[in-house]
Amino acid sequence: MFKIVLIGDGAVGKTSLRRRWMGEAFEVNYIFTIGCDFAIKEFQFDKDIKVKLQIWDLGGQPHFKEVRKAFYVGASGGIVLYDVTNRESFKNVKMWVAELIKHTKKKVPVVIVGNKIDLRINEGDYISTLEGLKLKRQIVKEFGVKALFSETSAKTGENVDKVFRGITALLLQELGVIKPVTTESVIDERYANLLTEICKLLGLNGETWKDAPEYVLDVLRRVLKGKTGTENSYSEAVGFTE
Ligand code: G3D
Ligand code: MG
Image: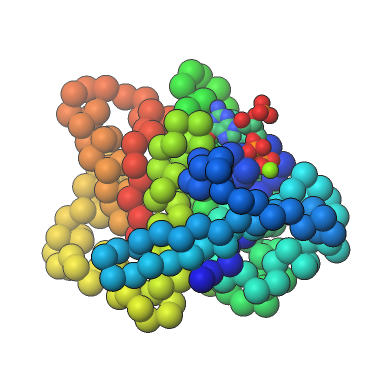
């Protein structure tokens, strides 16, 4: 059993994400003193491993910093959300990660999640997949934590399962229960160089293939078809790597 905290600015979709993954029927326990609730879901991670996740959801009073300390006690990992249509919430992600590390007193693994991708349809100042990936890399560097990145829609359900499986995978890796699947360990150096060069030729960060192979393929397809405007067009599954 792992305790996972769902954090991020108000209205980014924390409760919606949890509901989407757990279903409405789950029993939720409200902890009045800290204004948050938690629910437990047991699931089969793979054919041999069954995991219980205790999901703690920060309530509507994120301003009470003191009260939040109790919320973090004993957490093994965090899911940090921002809303892809809300730049302020994106800017605050690092603050949330810092707080998580401070109060758990451990470099707990995190999944960074850009939510509400169903709204990223027309023109607008939306947070792109690449911006999200870049932020994830910064967080890994600056905080020294293991991190994954994904983009979701709690409304359509896209990638929601992946987020909870992703944080579980990081925790199981930490315990040594499963082997970390690092891209480098499975890809020959020559091919790694090739993929890095392809990314650069496409105008992407050379590392993008490690985080989001599907995205690179999507960009490549568009370029080959002579299409441009790749920034906000991608809403398919974003691959997980360390
Ligand atoms: P919070 O728990 O982080 O505060 P909520 O956020 O889960 O309460 O969600 C805040 C609002 O955003 C809700 O709208 C919710 O329906 C909406 N929302 C959450 N996730 C998504 C998403 O992926 N796509 C879209 N389009 N909306 C989402 P209301 O209007 O009920 O306040
Ligand atoms: Mg909520």
